[in-house]
Image (cartoon, rainbow, N blue to C red; front, side, top):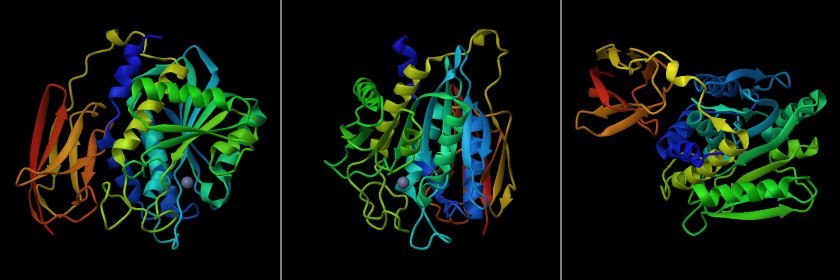
Amino acid sequence: MDDSLVRELVSRVSGDTVESLLVRMRQFATRYSSTDSCFRAMEWVRSRFEAWGCSTYLDTFRPGYAPNAVGIKRGTLTPDAVFVVCGHTDATSEIPFTLTPGSEDNASGTAAVMELCRATADTEFENTVWFIGFAGEEQGLVGSDSFARQAADRGDSIVLAVNFDMISYGRENKDTIVIYGARQAPGSEQWVDFFIAQADSFSDLKHRKTMEYIPQARSDHYSFWKYGFPAIRGGYSDRTPHYHSTGDTIGPLYYAQCGTNNIPMEAEVIKALVATIAKLGGAHLPVGIEQRPHRPAARLLEVRPTVGPAPLSLRLSGPLSMNSTLEVYDATGSLVRRLDCSGCSTASWDGTDRYSRQLPSGIYLFRVNVPGHSSVARAVLTR
Ligand SMILES: [Zn+2]
C-alpha cells in the first residue's frame, strides 16, 4: 500500500492527547475491577471508541467485575481477518477500593489503543480491527481469558493481537521498549520483527526484541497465546518504582513528587503501532468521501454559566473533528487545560488544570481551534 496514508495517520499521534487520556483515566480515582468507578471507566473507554467511528459493546465476563470495553471497525474487504489491539484498563494498588491511579500500569497501554483509534477515526480498514480495554487483568487476566476463549470457541480468525502493558516509564538512557514474543507461541516472532520494522521506518522508538521460550502469563497477550492466536506485547525495560501503588500517578518525566510518564517515548510507541495496524489492517480512506456534504467547521457557541461555579458547560455548533482542539486559558493567557471532546458537540470543564488541581476564581477563555480558524468564549469561574 501507499505509505503516504500511513505517514499521514502516524503524524496525527499527539503526546498532548496521550497525556490528556492518562489524566482522564486518573480522574476515575480507582479502576480496580470490582468497583463502580471501574465500571464508569470502562463505559468511558467504550464511548470514546464510539466517538471515533467504531461500533462498540461492553463485554461482561464475570458478575461483579467491570466489563471489557470493545470497539470494532469491520473490514471492508476481508472482515473475517481480525487484528486485535488491546491493553488492560483496570488497575490496583495497596488501597485498591479507594485509589489506583495506574498511570503507567496501565492507563499507558489503554491510551495507546485509544490514540490509535482516534488517529484512524476517519479511516476504514480492509481487515477487521478490534480495539479493546480489558478489565480483570490484575485478577489473573480474567477479562482477556474470557474474551480470547470465546473468540476461539466461535472460530474467529485473529491474525494477530498486539497488547501494551506499561509503556510510559523510562528514564534517560533506559527509555527502551521491549517487544515480546514467545518461541512456543506460533507465529509471534515474525510479528515482533514486523512491529520493529515499522518502528524503524515511522518512529524514533528505541526498542529491544525479547523472545520468551515458554509463554509467560504476564499480561493479556498471554490469553491469546493460550487459545492459539499469534500475539505480541510492548512493555517497559525500566520498571516504575511506583508499580501497583498509589504513587503510579501522572507527572512529567522527572517530576519528583510522584510517578513519572515519559510521554514522548509513549508517543513513539504509538507511532509504531499506528503504522503496524495501518499496514496490516489495510487502512484506506472511505470510498466516496468526496461526495459527502460539506460540513461547516465546529464553532464555540456558548459557555454556561457565564458567571458561576464549575462545572461549566460548553456548546459547539457541531461535533469537533479530530484535528481540532478545545482549550482553556487563564486571564494571563496561559494554557491551563485541553479538553478531550473530539467527536462531541458539548463539553464540560470542572474548573481544574491538567493535573486535576482546582483553579482559582477568575476570568477564563475557551478556544476552539479548527484548521483554518478559531472561535472563543469567556466565562468567570467563581468558587
Ligand atoms: Zn499491567
